[in-house]
Length: 191
Image 1 (tube, one colour):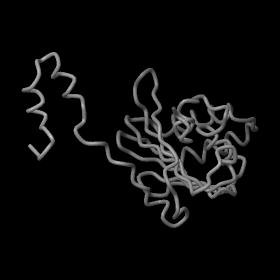
Image 2 (cartoon, rainbow, N blue to C red):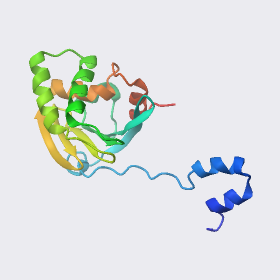
Image 3 (cartoon, rainbow, N blue to C red):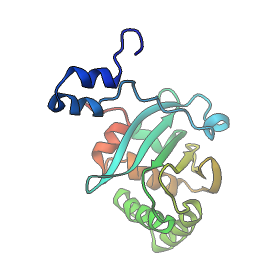
Image 4 (cartoon, one colour):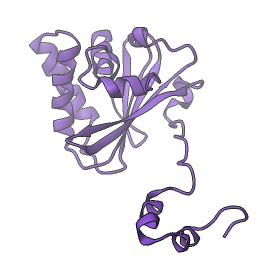
């Protein structure tokens, strides 16, 4: 036992089984704060964590999302500001499925042609490999239409297309998102 802090065993011995069971679920230390991704060092050196949230599907965690941006980030102008969106996956997903879902979600944000959809699907199929639990995907926007993608800190694809950048990051940051609670958390607006 550390001075002033009881161990889990001591806590269990103090209460009955009914009272002690919830204590097993209580962390005795605070979770570590997210570490700024290495990929931001050169292009977004003053990045700070704006917000973080979890995407769930039928109650199951899919990924934790983290928004990184420089000081003075304005949510309504996300497409014209340097930023990065980091996704830490909790389960196995196919890259092709991630790319296809991204195109569908981008359509919620704004219209685009079928030719753009084909080009963007090809880009994202290259950018998003199959992922497993603890894999990390990161999209880095320069605020001027340039986007680079990384898988576990290794660059996978890049493009220079302002429409794509606005619609892709809009999946999480636009008012039209299909996950408004996640958007609020990412923007640091959650209650």
